[in-house]
Picture (cartoon, chains in turn green, purple):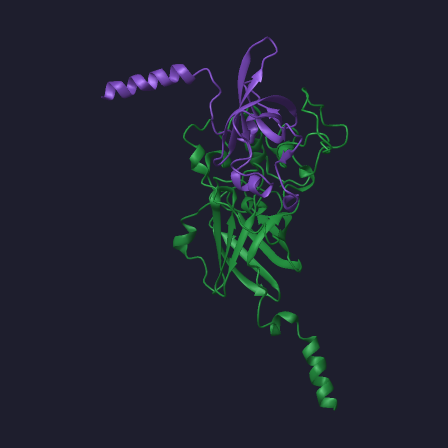
Amino acid sequence: MNAQRTAVLMFCLIPPGLYAQTPPDFSGVYYPINPFGAFGRGPAPGKQPPPAGKAPAAKGKEKGPPPRPTQSAPLADGSQGRSPDAPSLTPAYMAKWEMIRKSRMAGSSEYDNTAKCLPPGMPAMMTMAYGMEVMQNKDKITFFSELNDALRRVYLDGRKPTQKILDDPTYAGYSTGHWEGDTLVVDTVALHENSFIEGFSPHSDAMTVKERIRFLSPGLLEDRITVTDPKALTKPWETVKTYRKATSGNDELREFACPEGLGDAK
Amino acid sequence: MRVRFVLAGILGAVLFGGAPGLAHHSNVAFEVTKVITITGVVKTFEWRNPHTWVLLTVDDGKGGKVDWAVEGRAPGVLLRAGWTKNSLQPGETISIDMSPAKDGSKTGLVARVIKADGTILPNAGPAQQ
């Protein structure tokens, strides 16, 4: 009897990660919750300028004030400065940000990868503004972004980035992961500097990204992201993304085919 | 033959040069903190990536007409917000709440569309809020 009790007690004391045989399945389509942080919420009451013209009479339909065209609107060109929770840039990279800001405020797309149909890159792509599809098996988990049809693969089979891979950086980088209990821990390296951390905060080729991904509750996925960059950041930058699993009838992403409209890009 | 193509190109440039073009803009091309409303008649509705387009003929208030080319969200986003590729038909009157272009051209970025019967076509469905 005592031996049985001891066995049960010992089992309970073992950290869950050591006896969890089957990791959670993240597969599915998700939409981000408040993808652009505090700045992505609607305008403060009274801040929205009134419409210049008149709309046809709404027949019993609540029209309300017009919304902004994009959730990222106030941050899109930097005209309202940096978000208080933006990455803390070193002076050299802050100067670069200011230079990009001037270009964007003038309406130029020179530093806008999205407008050029380029992949958003890591970690910006995890904003997943248009929706995300996760495909998972034992050895690999793949994250797909509807925005710009961007893709990243996370290898779970124990492989590590080789020197050849480190010498060939990309937008999404090279990601390897392992399970710690129900949390997927992912390390991303081999990122070139032609993308942004978020918004248009620049980074160097020394940037690495660590993520801890888990279900907060059924269908509610969280990605805690830590970005380290000894050249561009004064301290590691942390951000948390949450995604809600799509419901039936709303669980299909569409082809993006960005270059369809690139022929006369401005 | 080649000369003909060149001539056709020049003719096209002359004919369409004055109308707003369907250039692919970044959000930075628009005053996204401002929203104005225009009302007019749909000329065409282009359902394509990375942005949809509404070409709208609007009264200029002086007895003339002026064409606007207004850029909307991507088809995938609009599908989930309740639109289809047939949501706007040529000839129908609509209002568009939109952010105007920074350069003052007759273009903008759609915030939402209001049809003549009051139906609102928003940019995002409840699942994406």
